Image (cartoon, rainbow, N blue to C red):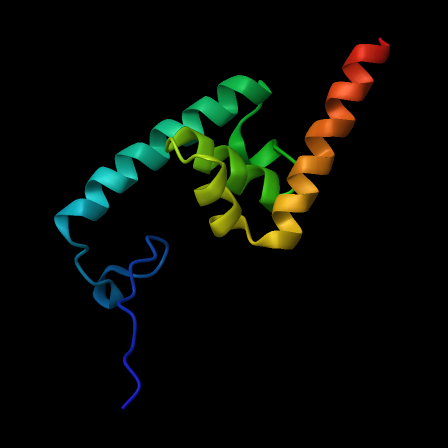
Length: 97
């Protein structure tokens, strides 16, 4: 029998939500702090920030203290390559200015 994952999406009606385990609350605090940092760095509210999901996931990995190996594992090879190329391009542009 296929095991179903619990539903914890906060935008679903209360009646359909599963009470998350205690560690999810700690994760929610960390994610809220990450969102605040993103908004501060971008100077925009979250809904106005336009960027690649790969860059956001990489930033989240850095925020959580993941090293290069774990970040590559989380991102997968194509996204990790994209992030590396983006960083190299950004550095090159900054050096030219």
